[in-house]
Length: 233
Image 1 (cartoon, rainbow, N blue to C red):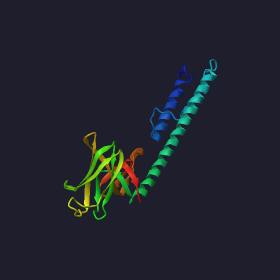
Image 2: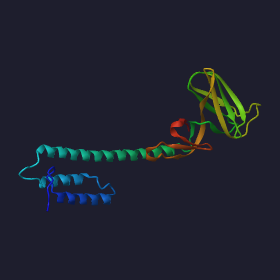
Image 3: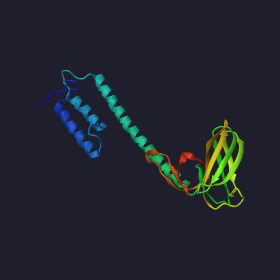
């Protein structure tokens, strides 16, 4: 026996058939079985019109409301498609940007740098507030202090410094990786500050799901693109 829904005017056998069709379609496309696509939605609307009670037809306003829902559904699907296209274009743009960075010199927020002492090194200290005394300590791979650079009093902002590659005795230091520790006296208290040092980009790691690019720097490891201050040649 076939029964009719009092709310939609669609016979239960028709609804069961439509549900099976929709479930079969969704299983083949890999979507959730409870989700209705626009084709299934339109089929449901047409079936509802065909099976309504002729003695008590559904109000025109309800059909208009359902048509509006169908239009809204189609618009949302179009929006999803547009967003997916934008995401794909963004990833392509990231890949192009990544390829252009390989082999270039950057100034990044880091406390280590690979130094050729014969060429020296120029970096900067990011001061969060004014300092009455600012120093940069240069340490070798063993953790020994090689040179202390006195920058004196500095105002808030970036304070540049240069290491000539020599130790405290005036001898040229060995080539290798050095650590730079900046300290600033703020309101009478010694406070550690961040340093920005030069490095060369060896490779770039693409961010997943729209994530940020990661630069793999020669001899220093990885650093996020947002921590790069300057990109050079």
